[in-house]
Image 1 (tube, rainbow, N blue to C red):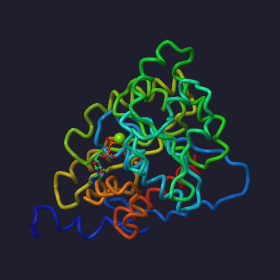
Image 2: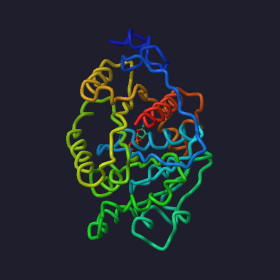
Image 3: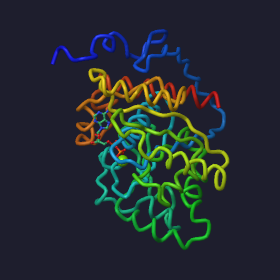
Image 4: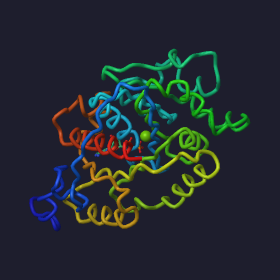
Length: 298
Ligand code: ADP
Ligand code: MG
């Protein structure tokens, strides 16, 4: 497989090196990470959102979270998918947990501290989820201010974290509306595959409606291209199309397709610790810097 159609040009660039062409064909910026200040914390809440499954939402939540923690930020990951994949990816088995985000959502007696789990990765906390959360989608329907339930859970602890990352379920149902209502910013992970753009109109329409009706603070943080394979013309065409549609909303950092990511799920830890010197780890570290710079600008 040494000679593959479009290989030539794409092999010469694509690393996240300031001043050089990146995988998106733009000059990679010099990212000056804002320094940590000791002032009171005001967290940025980011929802990882795309109603398509398998586009890298969970992988991004875990690894962006871990990379931000490496940069000294305190991070809360909210697993907001009844499948509990973010919990599993951090080594927490959804069927073994006693309490979950569901209990907080439904207003049980439990406090946030009863449910939150600290991780081996310093600075990275997890609100776990399991299949119980699927009941919330139905039970919340009859609640007052049903779209605000997650916002209410997060509000009292926002001053404890620099970032709250919400891993959304693959749907645009009430759980995802809750995530968008609780969020300040959205990241849309998109796979560099045909049909990546299918359903995007519905997704942006949903985000716009939440912004108009429920959460005027909500804004787009960026579109993240995942599962990119520089060796295929196909991947490059999809990337070019995403750049046409989303312009500079597309992050400079592009996540390559590598078996290392499924491996990390099995290992139950982020790629930044499982394979610290891998390209995948470097990419999520680069994304973390881009996120810090974009959040500081807004
Ligand atoms: P989502 O949360 O959107 O459903 P996931 O993050 O769970 O997507 O990813 C779906 C599957 O693809 C998982 O098995 C994951 O390990 C794998 N995966 C995620 N990112 C990559 C990547 N860059 N390269 C290869 N496999 C990946
Ligand atoms: Mg997921």
